[in-house]
Length: 386
Image (tube, rainbow, N blue to C red; front, side):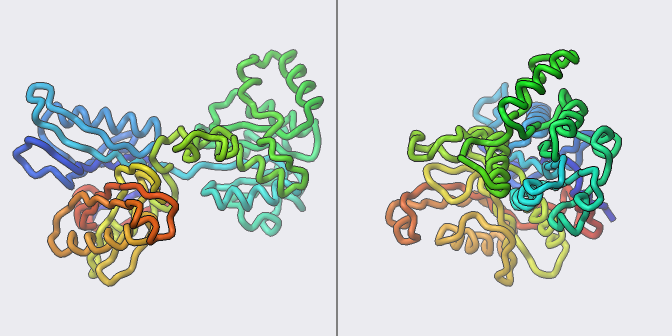
């Protein structure tokens, strides 16, 4: 009985296409953890080496990727691989439990963060005050690092009740390898903070890396508006947006640049994978559909996925409408035939108009019976997913 730990950071590599190859590789999988791997796609050295490189690169970048690998000795032989990262959810650490923190905790949870709130006042560091938070910590601001850890997936927002406490927090976090660090404050306060920390020996590059004043300029005044301004900057940093009105952006803008045409990993997709693994050993057949490429205007991008059950249930979505209906039908065929396939959805102008869309696009969706996951994950008898 194989234990499946879906709480760990990992990359799932799947063959979604092949050319000039003798064996049927489509659907084969291999899972990579930072400290090991499971499964085998082939015994071909060039292919296994390429798969390993792709997995390491995907773990580092954390972005859904589709790549082609070609046999260096026989260029007419190639495979197409889907690299699907499953990463721990990002963490939003809010230092300060005041009015801005109240709204930011709610918005942060909506954005998929694990939310931690810390304050030195018991009345403000209360789970009852922050029901949306995953963790609420009461501690002195000068001892934050004794209670909290900060890493590459941590976004830290400093919004305490006063200048001294803000500075105490910033001293402890600045220079750490966090995804984002921002501090609230007026222009005058920020100048004073920069000068004081520079005199204490903090390098200028570390000071420049802090978002202060925090947030985007949207004219925010109320605590709720300021929280939205901060959240907007967090999104911009994660997605690579330009923080400009879309009407002023060139065609094709608006989806960010950090992840290109791919969706960012989320806890929702981890849950879909968990359900797919469970269904591989269940009584009701299921098929997993994953968008691998898109062109033009589509409601979802590469990396979005949906689990379709034989009884008609579904978990997740690839955008709805007739495109999703077609994928559902093809998912039933995949279950009946027991074979994976690449399905193309064309949302041309007529189709888009029928769906109430302003324009059309196209996407390729890889659909596979959920049972194919058993090769690397077992039949889902024991699953850890936190």
